Every structure is written in structure tokens, then in C-alpha cells.
Length: 235
Image (tube, rainbow, N blue to C red; front, top):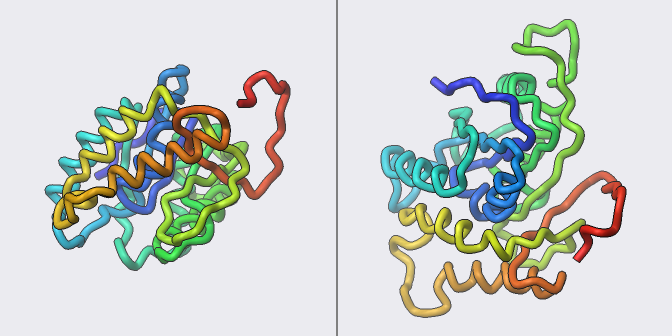
């Protein structure tokens, strides 16, 4: 049984445990350091996998959650490998949005080779709309998150053109430590010779950092225009 979320500033919705860490682990740590209340909702357990199990994945997720310093983490318990944006799942997610009342929601980029990732995007967008409805049996009060932003944790071998890149130079080590918690997913059964997966992830973060003049960065997309009140925060 999932505990109800507290009121949050940011809710990160991930198809599987580890997607939030891969796509925006640095941003999560940065948001927490800036005093924002951040939660992660995993839609599935991510199992079965070749070297994992529900018990292993639960321990790995708990360890990564502690490193990220999350205010809350939940799991909607939907089906891994067959995630669908059904009406039932939409209602479940809309209920979480109405209880957590996040200002910003993050989820996976809308184009991906993994069907679960594409389904997650569609589900989040539909649940955001449903969360604002009145005269409904959904729990909580109507709420419409101000914005959905999209992180890249995808399986397509292409270089995206993001809406913006966030400087995570000071947060990279914590992000890497959180990813390393998922030994069953990223390190078991993989060649140890360089470049390892850890090497590739660091190289990618370094490339994004190079593009904005910092050491490390994370890219994000948006379907809607992003408004600025000042240019002082631009890299």
C-alpha cells in the first residue's frame, strides 16, 4: 500500500525505478539543496529484469532515494513491460497529483524506443488534465500543475535538442552514487572494460555541461514556451 504523498513543489514521474536517477538525478539533488520539496512516483517496479528481482529492486531504490534526499517516493504498481495509459491508471495518477499538488511535474521525453517510456508521457499528460476536474470521484481537491517538463532517459541513439540544460556540476557525484545503487540494472552482467556504462553517463553529462559552459549538465524538453523573468540565471 502506497503512502499518500505530502504537498510537493516537484513531482518526478518515472516509468521504472532508476529512470528518475538516470534522467534527472542531478536536478533532483539541486532542487532539494534549494529548499524545494521533491518526490518521485515510479509507475512500475521495473521487474522482471535479467539480474533483478522485486526484493533487489526495492533495496536498490531505497538506497538511491536516501542519496537523493527525496521528501517522498511512491510506486503506482502498474505493469512493467506493458505500461498503458488506461483510464484506471489515469485516475490513479490524477489522484496522486491532487494530493501532492506539485507546481512542476517531470516525466520522460515523449519519443522513446521503450514503449513504457512513451506510455508514461501520455499517461502523465492525461492525468494532469484530469487532476483539475470538478464533479468527480477523484480524491483530493482539483489541481492543475503549472508545467510538465521532460527529462531524457531514453533508448534511442540520437542527440536531442533540448529546451534547456541545467548545470549539475555540484550535484554530479550524488547523481552518480544514486545510479550506482542499481547494480542489478547497470553493472551486473556488463563488461568491466572501458568505456563502462558509468563512463558513458559521465561523458554525456560532460557534453551537456560543455554546451552551456559548465562541467556537467542535464537536458530537458518542454512542449510549451518557457517564460523568463530575468536573464541573470542563464549560463
